[in-house]
Image (cartoon, rainbow, N blue to C red; front, side, top):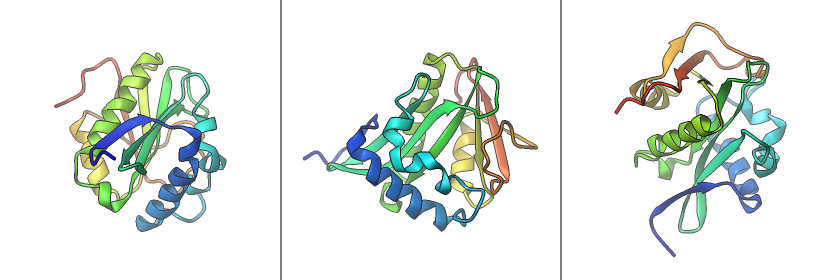
Length: 168
């Protein structure tokens, strides 16, 4: 088995691992109550949820084990030109290796390929490292939520115009 990090599209065999990652990581950041993505119906069947047109979810694997993931889908209640970065989480062992940037760049490339013009994301105050990454790649913080995600527990919101090149 390879000891390298592998970034690939989600497969049905990954569903249980991705659900477990989401359920393990979100509470670390206080995101386990009502109004957070941990309760979304798609958590159980991510591969099916992201198999639809203009949806894409990617996992990071090491030694045959999924250790993180993230995806792109249309923003619920948003314009057809707007996508949302969704459920990007990593187990502790996968953090600090540059995987967040690699995965985020892959998600944004997918969003452009799918014809989106704007990428939106929701996060919360305690996820400082993720917010540094978003800002470094060119996301701008906006004052309020967009669309109708139902994630009223989130308190930080960002967008990125996909026509602009990503920052280094």
